[in-house]
Image (cartoon, rainbow, N blue to C red; front, side, top):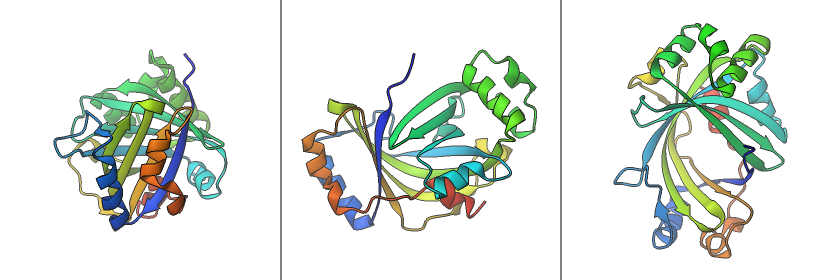
Length: 225
């Protein structure tokens, strides 16, 4: 089934902006049910790129059509790991996902890819082909803390990402690992929605008062690893 592309807006905001926005959103929106009691969860992502830094360069150059592969899990729950491909085209984004086991991720990080060619999941086979033909390899780990909010009308998802840090792309990815801060004090507001952004939410966010950001967590963390 073809996935519906979603609008994606990204803004770099100050801590004061975050507190003000959070106060406005809390009475109206609900936290993502997957978040903890404090409304937060930690995201661990391992990104792929090739030896020519194709993914990084396309992001920095502002290319309007691009894609990236990553492996992601949340908090310390390595029993639920996803391979994701995120595609962007002229401001719209779509994401595809396939499950991975911890053993499969460890094998991939050791350079054992043979099993990928026989996977029942097309996305895993696609990554295998691109690792063979385009030299995609695990390049860096991006960690951060996320506070997510949901609003049903328009399928709106609003997230605040902070404590962005980087670690090396090796088997420690699946273990509690020490990450190096990569964006001290930066908070990234992301707004995703389907066909429209409800006026109520647009009014609460007052997006016109914030600078649209080309900020990339992956690009920032590549400066560290």
